[in-house]
Image (cartoon, rainbow, N blue to C red):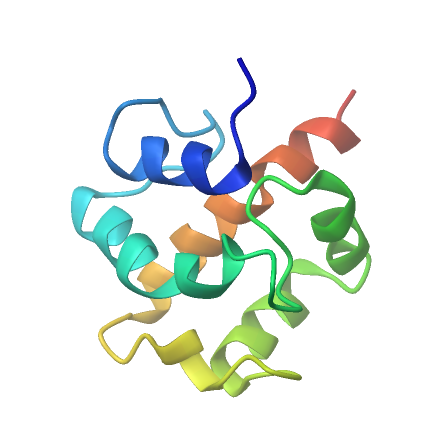
Length: 110
């Protein structure tokens, strides 16, 4: 059975699938993911890197983890500051970034 990135992300968010072991998120952060991040990071018609797209996230990791956080907070290209998540704290953003980066980190550790 083939699962799209969106289905996997929703499955993780709803607790149907376990998030990657390297990412620790709270139920509130999973709700923030669904309500905010996945609006673009699970939609193939945006320029946002899709959740689970190892290559796209590895390319961003080359700029460093701190740059990814800076881009998230300040906005970049089509991504608005804070990714529309006015309810997100810095801790939330870090946890959600780690969740998005987890597959790319696992791949790079092989």
